Image (tube, rainbow, N blue to C red; front, side, top):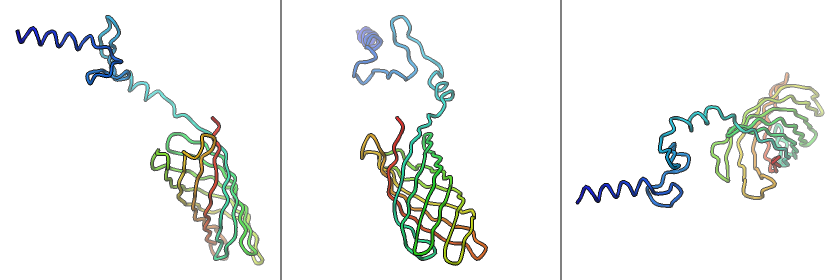
Length: 193
C-alpha cells in the first residue's frame, strides 16, 4: 500500500504544470523542458546564452553644477558630459569649466566610473585624465591632469533622468608646482531609452 501511495505521489509531481505556484514547480529558465512528451534536461543552454551575450551599452548625456576650490580659492563649476555605460562600468567624455577668484580653467577629460552596487542609490568611484587650459594673473598654460573621485546616483527620482552628486579631486601638472582642485557637483543624466 505504501508503494502505491508513493507511486501516485511521484506521478502527480511529474504532471504538475510548470507555471503553477507550488513549491515543486520548476522555473522557466532552470534548464528543464516540461512540455508534453519532452521531459528532458537542457545541458548548459543558460550558460551558453550568458557567454555569447554582449553587454548592453546604455548611452546618456548630462550636466552638473557646483562648487570648485582651485589652489585654495573657491568658485563655481559647470560640467557637460556624455556617458556610455555597460553593466557596472561607464566611460564619460566630459568638458568642465571652473572659475575661482581670478583663476579660470577649461578641461576636456575622459573618466571611467565603476559602480559598486546596482541598487536605486548607486555609489561609484571614478578615475581619469584631462587636458586643462588654465589661466590666472600669473600663469597661462595647457597641461594634463589626473582625476579621481566618488559619487552617488539616484535612479528613482524620475524615469526620464538620473540625479547624481559627485566629488572629484584633480591635480593639474604645472612647471611651477602642481595645482590641486576639488569639485563638488550635483546634476542630471538623461538616458537615451
